Structures are given as structure tokens and as C-alpha cells.
Length: 355
Image 1 (tube, rainbow, N blue to C red):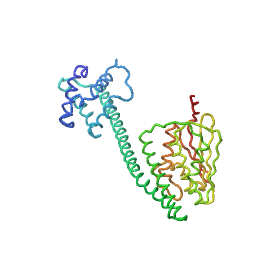
Image 2 (tube, rainbow, N blue to C red):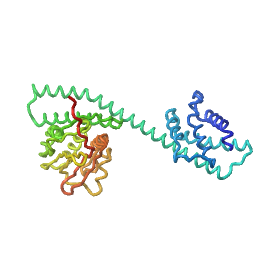
Image 3 (cartoon, rainbow, N blue to C red):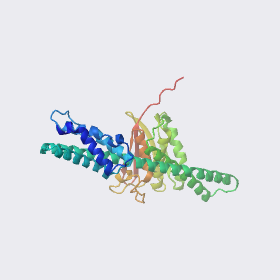
Image 4 (cartoon, rainbow, N blue to C red):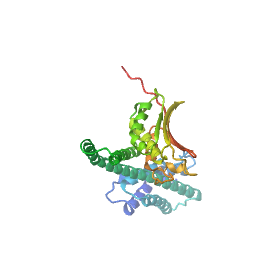
């Protein structure tokens, strides 16, 4: 009955300790106490046989950890708060000359340790999400700032090409380089947006025409290696999707297929609908994967190499775009031939247009 009778005193004592040992003096009392009173109530229920069943984790501890992150506490300080609560309980029991039974002490220690785990887990989760948000915003800012000078360079190049530059392989290489830089910047912006939780903007997409547009965009790159791009899709295949995100996913797969395919091979891009699913497959002519390398392709930051042990940022963007459509990407090794990447998403039929 100690904690029930001394609840207010316990919370006050704990608040005084935190104020003097951890928290800044300017921190409002109510903000300092935060979820601790409710956490103490959970502990009181845990100590008594008539207590209602407690959940496996403490929502109050989780919310406490998140709140402490916002106030600038570090993880060690969050842990220390629960240690101080333990000290306050023992001190109040000692002053009241009441012995804490072994069973009660086990319950107190167990619930405090659980609170520490829940608070720290939520603290770390929210901290990592914030770092992810900041890095994504920074990446998006850099990519956005690069767009303007690149746009000016492309405009100047096209004017020169029309008036002064003769057709040559060098001119084609410069044009391809500018085009690829633009695609990389757009990809970086897509990557940043997806990591920030971009909500897809769904619209009707005619898959065959859509894939032929991607084929046309990649034509110069394919011609340089004498690779044929073959598009296979039903004429009437129409689905609801975010065109920009889907284009980013398929384009990244196609460009990487061209990058790793051997010269004078074939890249096949196909689409089909079956049992409520839409699949878009990109099959390349890379010759296949080294043993055990298929899983590594899905690490978005692995450095690309000649043996294709990593697929770089491109697959990371493609995977995020697929996941934004509640789908995924899988890879199948075709030994001696190449790799088959499959975008697998729910197939949503376009709504009939209102007249």
C-alpha cells in the first residue's frame, strides 16, 4: 500500500531530484513530470493482486522517451530518470520504516527495467526518424539546387548544337551526360521524397505506351552498347499508379540493366496483370550473378562493381517507389544469361471517368 499512500510524495521527490540533477531549471514542472505519474500508476497496479492485466509494454514510457527527445535529453539521462525513481521508492519506504518484500522489489525492478527499455526504444526510433528526415531534406535541397545550373547548361548546349556544333560522337556523349545528370538529380529528389513518406498521386497509366516512352529515353544509351530493348505489354493494359514514381522505378531498373548488360545483348521490359497483381519485369544480359550475391543487390548504398555485387541507389529508389504502391521488387538470377527484376504491385483498375 506504500505507493498508493505516498504517490504524490513519490512524484514530488522524483521531480525535485530530476530538476537538480538533470533538467534545466527553466523547464516547466508539468513538462518535467510528463508521463511519470501515469507510469507510477501502472507500477501501483502491477504491485497489487487485484490489478488489471498490464500490457507487455508501457505506452507511458514510450511517450516519455519521445517527449524527452524533443526536450533535448540524451539516452543516458532517460535511463537515469528511472534509476532515480527506484531510489525515491526505496527512500520513501525507508523513511516510513516499511520493508519492501522480495516479491514487491522484483515487481518494481521488472517494471522499471521494462519502462527503461520502452522509453529508450522509442527515443532511439524517433531520433533515427528525425535524422533520416534531416538527411532526406538535405539531399533534396542539394538536388533541387543543382537543377537550375544544369537546366541552364542543357539549354545552352541545345542552342549551340542547333547553330554551331556538328554531329559527332563527342556531341552525343555530352548530350547523354547532361541527360543522365538530370535523371540522377530527379532520382535523388524522388529518393528524398520517398524517405519523407511521399503519398502516391494515382492516375490512369497505359502501360504499353508508358514503357515505350522509357525505352525511347534509354535509346542512346542502348545504341552505344548495341543493346536491343524489347517492350512486351498488352495494348489494353491500363492501371492506376503514380506515373512519376512508377517511371522512376522502371527507369532505374532499365538504366542499370543497360549498364551491366554485355554488348550486343538484349534487355526485355514486360508487363502483365494476373490475379489482382501487376508485374513489370526487366530482364538484362549481364551473364548472371556470382553465387550468394542476389541478396546484396537490395542494399541501396552498396558500391557498384564490375561483378554487380551492389546495385547502388537506383534499386533503393525503385524499391521505395514499389513500396509506396504497397508492392515490392524481387530479383531472380538467370545463370549464364542475366538477371530478372520484377516490380510486383497491386493492380488497381482506373475508375470510370464521370461525364
